[in-house]
Amino acid sequence: MFIGGTGTISTASVARAVALGHNVTVLNRAASSVRAVPAGVEQLVADVRDSASVAAALGTRTFDVVADFLSFTPAHARAAVERFRGRTEQYLFISSASAYQKPPARLPITESTPLRNPFWQYSRDKIACEDIFTQAYRAEGFPVSLVRPSHTYDHTALPLLFGWTDVHRMRAGLPVVVHGDGTSLWTLTHTNDFAVGFVGLFGLPVAGEAFTITSDDVLPWDAVYRSVAAAAGVPDPLLVHVASDKIAAVAPAFGPGLLGDKAHSVIFDNTRVKSLVPAFGTTIRFADAAHAILAWHVDHPEARVVNAEHMALSDRLAAL
Image (cartoon, rainbow, N blue to C red; front, side):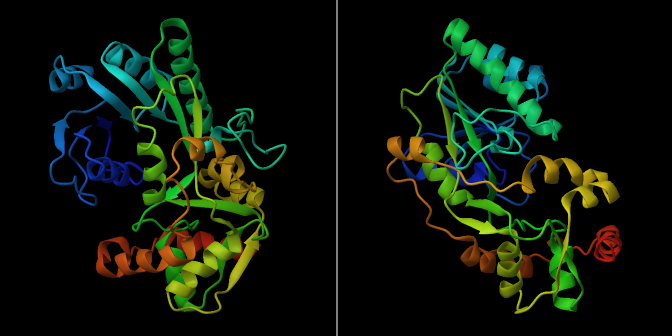
């Protein structure tokens, strides 16, 4: 059972599980209009934050595997342990690679890299969730494994600071803000590749272990922007570099995600998951996927939103 199942990361994993012959159930609010549940998947409708509705949807059922994509705070983790104690043989918690030490003391980042992020509450909450799940494993054998994806995308996702507004600015010949100097390294993982590694863990005796599941597709941020520009038909975008701390000072809402994650070079070692799931690897490079992302936006005009606030913020930052 997938808790979630229609998000950027989880949708492809549901499809992968179906393709491998698993009997798949998803538990969510049935609210997604972007990513459909594959045929043959059972859908239980409940708000995971409403214990009564979840209890009614689950009844007395048990599952071989529960994949949790929707626990973000310690309260969520504690509720999950209570809800699924004795009801599953394997519990896979989706944490975050942003929980790893920032700035990293050394690269590549492995599962033994310390967990510490003083910049981003989201990451600290994921660390706290891991602590709760790990304590439950140590105290009572709760069969949890920790999965740490990094920046995972699908055909709908633009990994740019201002999304479609940046594409609009590229095409208009306007300056596009890139944080830092554009040379820090970033790892982008296509959700289809992530799904191979993640679903490959189903049924394996890995309780108590942690797994980084990311691509080996490592690019400087300028290359990320230039890949999107090329797919958008802009051979030479006007990229303007602004220090991340300056962006955070002008636009505090962007500070945690930049200073707590994207501003730091990250390269991950996926040896552990590769040793258990030989099929896992990098088959989709972002430079190729960028064309599919732009094609999806062409077909979905509702996603081509030029944000007036982001336009003004881009102009302000570019003038610094």
